[in-house]
Image (tube, rainbow, N blue to C red; front, side, top):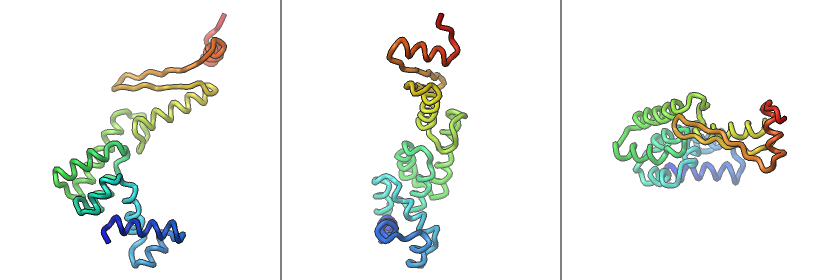
Length: 168
């Protein structure tokens, strides 16, 4: 079996037979971490799985790509790994650089979150604190803008009160 077929077999043992990683490891004579890492390969996009299936990439390369927090960067990482013929260690270093670059874009971004996910969570928190008004955060580079949507004049008065603006 190629690494993807093996991962699919492990996943099938999990789903159809209710086996846990440790049980699968004992059944197959593999380490639990080997089973877990194998199954994680199925989180990769189909094209990257195909690269592993057809030996254009190794499972180690796949795990390095998986470690990139922003999935939108996976295709670029895949391309760089393949065109530059990177080793697994070099691919891991590349993944770390991608993750560091995302963190540097906005220091408020929590580790493991893309900018989009970060601002989406801020929008939700802001909206919740305003009682459900729709909040949008627009960002481009260093410029950010907060938009609060409302429908009626009464809604505007409610917002102004929440912000402590007198409506005399």
